[in-house]
Amino acid sequence: MAGYEPRHHILTVVVENKPGVLSRVAGLFSRRGFNIFSLAVSPTEDERFSRTTIVVDADSAPLEQIVKQLNKLINVIKITELSTADGVEREMMMVTVKANAELRSQLTELTAIFEAKIVDVGYEAMTIMVAGEPDKLDAFSDLVKPFGIVELQRTGRIALSRLARQPVKLRAVKSARA
Image 1 (cartoon, rainbow, N blue to C red):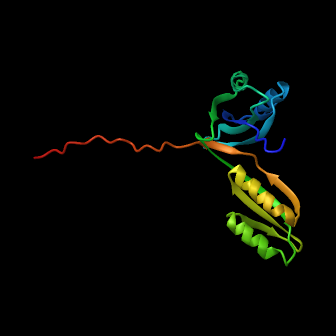
Image 2 (cartoon, rainbow, N blue to C red):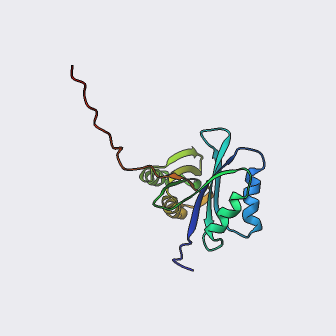
Image 3 (tube, rainbow, N blue to C red):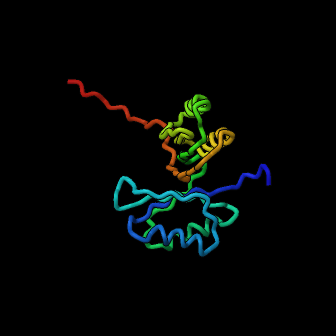
């Protein structure tokens, strides 16, 4: 349906960094018919744990049911739902675009506008990496489509909780006068 924007739940799930954990998490979604829109996994600052960012189609699964099922998995340490206001989301895309000598300057300008980076250049194509919010990647993809997309790969979303914006209140310290 034109103009339909699917609603998503964004979950960050900290799990033990052990073989088979990702398979169990993905299997849980698959068995229950929950549609995973995006899945990204990487080790955290503590190598014993991995952070999994799962973007789930809200229409395919009630959030409470997802969280209950994830909590049943032994290797799950912590689950956090992030709303757009509570989280910072980013995604990376690499796209190979047809680019003969005549078109390279146009693509180079477009790359600069989007703060992207050219990572490989061939005689008839170039590969560009762009990172940012998913809407930014969608816009870049739409603009390079007329040049001819040869290959495109996106990482899927990653997200962290937004940091507090309130200053820390300090107590006044009485100075000792001699």
